[in-house]
Length: 126
Figure 1: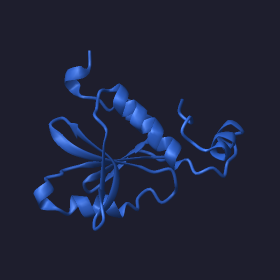
Figure 2 (figure 1 turned 120 degrees about the vertical axis):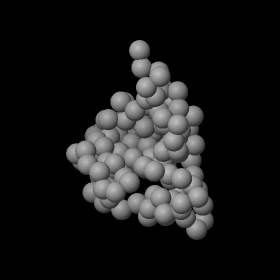
Figure 3 (figure 1 turned 30 degrees about the vertical axis):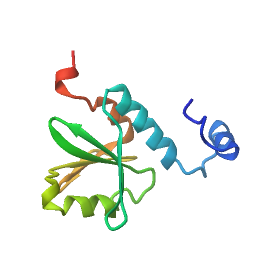
């Protein structure tokens, strides 16, 4: 199901375990499925001047922008930085899911991609 909307060549690369595939869309799809499984409505942000964000959710009563990065330049996220600079939006924190360890730089927290499974509202934890 994960690859059903991808083109034939992308599907073949995934099942053949080729290393040169751009994993960005696969990672975004995984994060979307995980957020949806945790009952977060999925919102996308796109603005010509500010850029685009992969996901915007409401978490713990706050707006939480989420970026998903598959490459080594995961700390480069101009759209996210642009959004965080707008005081009227009131965004306190942002998450980036990537292939690295956990760390925080300013308002942005970085998590390993698999850790998206732990993102859920406290009221929903049993």
